Amino acid sequence: MAPHELRTGTGTGTGPGPTVGFDLDMTLIDSRPGIHATYRALSAETGVAIDADAAVTRLGPPLEEELARWFPEDRIQAAGDRYREIYPEYAIEPTLAMPGAREAVDAVRALGGRAIVVTAKHEPNAKLHLAHLGIEPDEVIGWLWAEAKGTALREHGASVYVGDHTGDVRGARTAGALSVAVATGPCDAAELRAAGADVVLPDLTDFPAWLRSHVAEGDAA
Image (cartoon, rainbow, N blue to C red; front, side, top):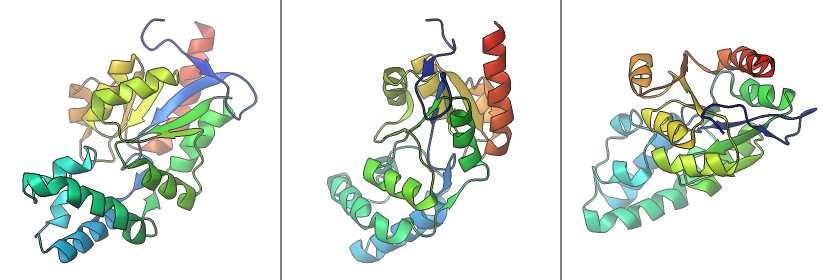
């Protein structure tokens, strides 16, 4: 199969349609308030100073990369375990859906496709976020970052991957999927284009129209 060739899957819609992958943080959800609160709680508990304001500007990479800025190497694993443990208490309630998130997932379903979430986030916490916000993908796959996301995207037959970070672009390209980037996270439109994104949208509100056009072009080819 050639890169970007439209793959189809069995979703909850009316017929065969594309399998589309979505990143989570700053793509489907604005988790900054909750992550900020969790870092503050972790800082208070451990006595380690963490600049939560700065940390939430760097969302995307694995948690351990951020913790390495604040904790010595021999404490990173324990700090990460504790962060994930207290995360549901502090982060789920204040997190909001990004504009157009539900509509983007619904657009995949309307075309008979499958929507999957592939994220670097701890998978149980990712599922808590989506359940709380009423966003219901067909699959949620966690603990994957950048090129490693390509493995899950290939396994699930995704032809499109939507994300906000240059790492998401790399994941899509590794999978041979079309990279659709939204400029809603730490990387601006110019950075996303420079990283090789095939499509750059301001946010997810433009995604349903783009997807319908993309699928129509594939049907006509």
